[in-house]
Length: 444
Image 1 (tube, rainbow, N blue to C red):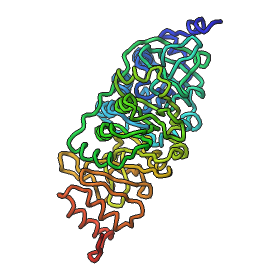
Image 2: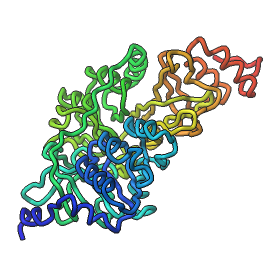
Image 3: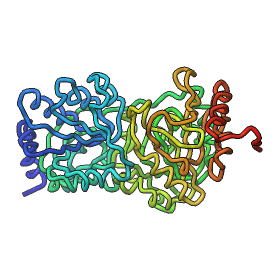
Image 4: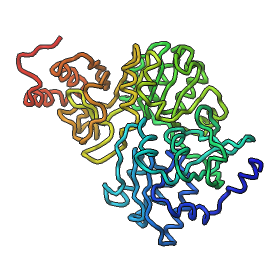
């Protein structure tokens, strides 16, 4: 049988998709761009019309299709959503449902997610968007190697949504027709994430980070206005490398200009390594069939023991709040999950383990229009994403502090200096009340 014949044999109707789900308890969905919208709509329609058994749904970074079709008040109780990293769409679904605990949050470092979804949890079925099949019978996971490249070979059943807009990428992104249980075709345009506009404060922070990045460094950047601004300030640099959880349009731009070329990397020289991509159509087109851009599972890309193999690794991420001893919360607001651990701690540790490596946590000094300080006496979110032992550089619009080697009083003094001037006096008084500072202490 030819691969094209096997393709036709494995093409499913909507009813056949639901039949395949029949004995499944744990459904795992591809992440972000790779979350299959037509398969999601097929499941939603079936559950609205029939009394089907409950499902546990595991995923990261939910899509608009998930929010609008499965995470609805009408289907609450039919599914147990278990999310390892919340998106804006997940937060909207929680608001619409009126129950902040309806979506169950699963804490996990990103490099551990593949193991969690294949060993701790039994993956009954995995659904994901892939590129069209090539003449050798291979699809590509395209924008998302993440946990998909791991789960797809461990799940009992694999159903893919073939989309002509999904780019074909290299690395560990290939999936053979013989490895899947079934497929559907749906050429819905891929979800796009517009580049965040950098504010004046973002630029002030970005300039401090950019001036600490050297020619030949290897980069990991998070998402948002600050990372985009930092990347735009690096156009005069040379021989930068990329080993990043996220691939973004700003990175594609620097690759196109030859600024990022991977020439000095020791691991995967000349290759631009990622595990997931968020961006626009132009970025997807840039990735398509580009042998320099390689996707690998998060279990490898985000593994600190792998990250540290490239010297001069630089990690730039954001936070919600930092306490005056250096503990970092990047995932909860007032005890309610906002995003997730993701890969931040992976890269904070991996970067510092790299010879000459360093990590930066960048945040605005205030929130809510200046009403709240984001440098706080104690974390209010209820979660510690990065411990004070792991914290390296903290950056606000008021400066950059290297916390390594500083005593608690020195850290407190330095971090209060990063706070907005309106909050420094009260933070100092609170630090004294907590026993972190004494009246007789002096700092250089």
